[in-house]
Length: 572
Image 1: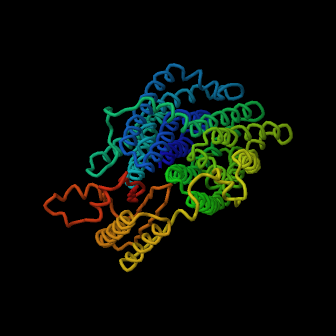
Image 2: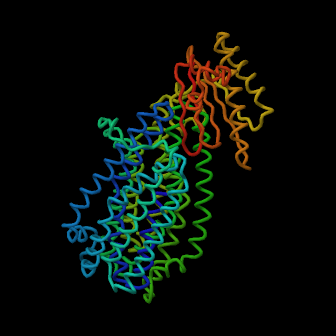
Image 3: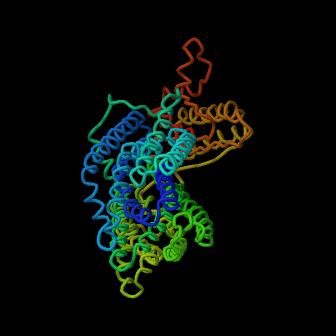
């Protein structure tokens, strides 16, 4: 959703500028627009890196440490954005020249500078939206980011139209309107903290500044992707300013808008994969990691293929949103959009795996992949092909890059599988890049899902049999079986009946050495058993006896909730 909000602002500005301000304005917008991604680069690094760390801590059951990570990410992201805004404003004209408002495009400098100043004012709000939206889904609030995005969109549309028809402004006012719409979106997101059952709390009391380095390291792949995106766009604009006309630069702006339209779909899935990969790695769940990656690849390819087909066949209509009364720019734009559509499904696969690498902590590999995907291979292929096919090389470079990335991943997996000594494993075991000692053997774990009260007793019996087969002492065996029966019964009784939706309970028990770890996960309304126990006093010892006994015996008794899933982890 954070990526979508940024793309919406860019898309709306592009349409209004293209329809009402002319070809030069849309070309100037296209020169500056890639920098908007870099504007929020530190926010992206902090947001992604902190969420990777946050979910890892949640998976390990360290709630206080996780909350401190959230507070630190807000301070770092918004604070840095404010400083960066103050630095950018005085040097806007020089930055616009570097971005490509020079040479054959020197006439675009005033408009490009004005738009840059207007949009830079919203940098703190951009980073705030990126950071807060990323955490909302984890904290069981998926609707508020959508509402914030809607408010931002409506505000931007209203202000943009006011700029054109009321104030008769140009690119500066358009950029400022987008900045103000971001601040409106942030105000909506802040309403999340008015709720009583939110896990996220901003506080400077438990800040751990030493975590800053780890957050940045984990988030660098995301930042590198955004900087690479700007580097690539700057290179392409400069290349076009040398070998082509203003019409081609305007067409490249449309090409970038097609990316803004489709990219959030892929990036949203990829960011979710990164979050879940971090959680599953914290749980050392090899089987679920493989399933996560396989399902995400299948889903991403199917969704992006559908959108890419629509984009390909409706390329003229899409281009017409941004280009008006310029047949040359229109013809080039259609070609540019169709080339993007051809490469989009494969781009989705490449982004998914790059974010997966980030989620499992392979930052260097993710950094390298991100740079090659967003800049390296694109600039290399465009630079080479330009000698033979001219400006068309800029459009063809995108699908060519996706093929090169798939080859790169195949080589990388081969090399790292050998380095990690992954032997006698399936292809998916090699693709997830986990060493042989990661997780537990299939003989030392059991997973089961139940959907009704009739299955509770059987689940309890399965837990008993699992423990008995591995030499567990009678006391722990009894308590684990009893607590599962009581927990599952309570979830079904109080959670399943709250709505007409189908629910499930997923139980996993693992034997690690002499210890047993029990994880119970359900998709019912938020319910913390540990807090529930605090409601009962010693005068009523018969209530929830299983939970009472297991919580007293357990080495660790942790509850967390993310993506609207309740997770209880008990170690005995």
